[in-house]
Image 1 (cartoon, rainbow, N blue to C red):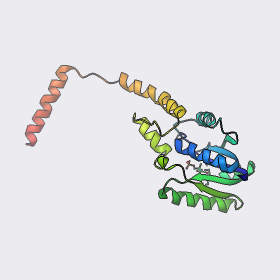
Image 2 (image 1 turned 90 degrees about the vertical axis):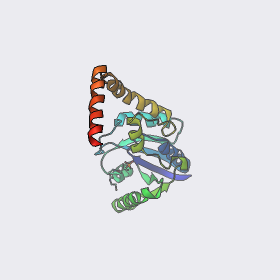
Image 3 (image 1 turned 120 degrees about the vertical axis):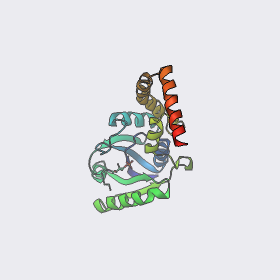
Image 4 (image 1 turned 120 degrees about the horizontal axis):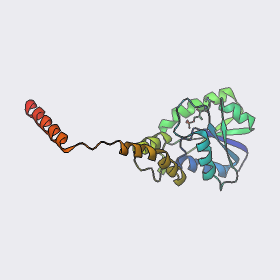
Length: 193
Ligand code: PNS
């Protein structure tokens, strides 16, 4: 086990099974791991910082050397303020590498004493990202196996009102209007032919 604190920063909107896999791996090799949620992200998030904090706390309750926190501004400044010696980031595929390399080198420029360590999540999560999970869930698709159950439940709670609203506003087309629609489309078809 490596002595000292490592920081695992990110947006975690929402936390996925890939994130959890990395946290579990990180907790085995670092003395203490601080999962740090960025508060001032430019993107408009699906989950509030408080919701993400609550989900990550619940998910890591059994990992005694893992702590969840939030930060604002420069990540390296926050890392220094908690005496972290290392930044942990996950790399799923080669496509992640360019962005991660750029970020690691910029962070090294900002704070040369902080090392970035990359770890790979289990290959079964190599295609899982928060963005795709949001996209699938928003379209009503299944996210089972991609996110922990707590997160799946939260996604359902968040998106269910939208579905209900959508269902309640679906106007039943009266039979005679349907007949008229059919006539018009038949006419159009004949014209085209
Ligand atoms: O999960 P993400 O969205 O890929 O995480 C990106 C994050 C939060 C690690 C990164 O955007 C970050 O550290 N932002 C804080 C501002 C900062 O320090 N920027 C310089 C990084 S090179």
